[in-house]
Amino acid sequence: MTKYCILLFFLLSSLASAQTLFDEEQVHTVYISIAPEYLSFMYRNPGADTTFKADFCYTDGNTKDTLKNIGLSLRGNTSRGAAKKSFKVSFNEYAVGQRYRGIKKYNLLGSHNDPTQIRQKLFYHCWAAFGMPERRASFVKLFINGKYYGLYTQIEEFDKDWCERAFGNNGGNLYKCRYPADLQYLGTAQESYKAIKHSSTERAYDLKTNETADNYSDLVNLCKVLNLPAGPEFDSQIQKAVNVPGVLKALALEVMSGHWDDYAYNKNNYYLYQNTKTSKFEFLTYDADNTFGVDWLGVDWAKKDVTNWLPKSPEKRPLVSKLLASNDFNQMYLRYLDTIGRYVLHPDTIFPYITTIHNLIKPHLVNDPYYPLDYGYSMNSFSDGLVKKVDGHTPYGIFPFISNRISNMKSQTSGLLIATNRSPHFKIYPNPFQDFIRVETDYDGTGYLCISNVYGQIIRRHEIVFSEKTAVSLQGLASGVYEVYCLDQHGKCLESVRMLKN
Image 1: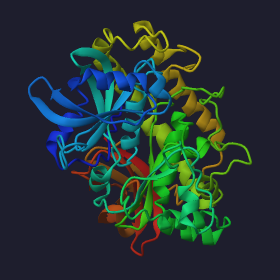
Image 2: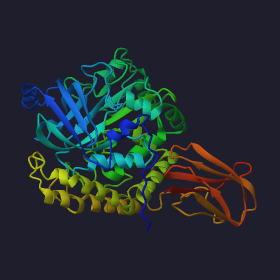
Image 3: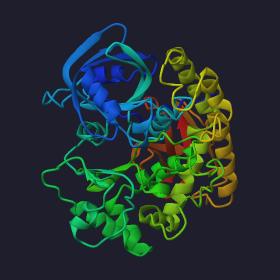
Image 4: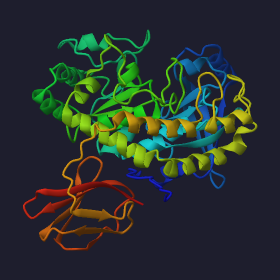
């Protein structure tokens, strides 16, 4: 089959320099200088949420930038106890308004439990490839006080700057939601939701913007809608409260990548942003390291039923369970699973990408002093991690996990996906296409060919005269997955098909 390349629907940064910061084709270098006593404190007290003043230097081989007085702290949960720790860099911690290449904060992830070191990057590559708002990530070599600390994944923070770029606004409430944030309705009192703790110092629904106002009324309203019984009223109200396609797309990608440490399975690791343009919540997946076969619960995630992902009763996940109880929303979810299997995770699509980044980072992992410390990983582990089991929590290589996951998804959903608006008298090709598509039909008349993006928004509309063969130019259309519709002159859908633009 044709080897697809579906780096699609990337929401481009307005700052070209920020794109350079997240260069997928090179491994750049980060140097951090910090007082030795501060660094020692962090390693002796990994549970402390203390930020220390440090200096930051970044070089891509051609330019070398230095910023004084940045903030450095440890990040993560269980990873804080690892030998190879992860860090948060805050460029504006001690210099108000300071940014580096358009970035206010970002993370340096050690990926200590991943022998391949690529799972987090791979997940967000697929996230963007599936048309979700891009969260940029790339690889760097990290030096602290002149010592090589190893290969790291640098990944931008979900914050106001990110929301502005992704949604065109940043004034809404942004909640970082962690265990046990299940979105159950607890009544109208905001304090009931604020009182749920992720840790002794952090709320499970942790408001990251508009902290002074500390107004949780939007979250309370969402949970109130989620408390409605499944049915037409719920279907109507939930579409006013959340970006339903975005939720179901995130769920489908989590399920297909085996991301069990998520909202749906583990009531953990997601953000909610109240988009002020739409007044709807956007759903954002977070902390995707336990993916593509990683398991800590004794579950085979390649075989886990995609139609039965939720944990057993009495656990409740109303945002997912209520959506999937709706026939229309359930069909939407099944179509997203099918699209991911056909395009985003298809071996012809994703295996070459995985191999490319594997080869890119290999030379920089050889001398990583922290890579072997937590699980005894070696360069053999690094290579084996793509093709076979490495240890107890990585029972799959990434390649066989993806192949098995797609195969199991197809068998689990066989006969469930209902074809809509399909006619035996239309043929739309080629798929994938480049600058033109052709329509062959025995339908005689005028009508329209429409192209919609993954959010269902019509972005191209061509008036055409249907004939035995009709060619339509789609030059200038970005690479990605689209829904293509043939409509008659009254707007009735005669045919629809999902297609890939190379």
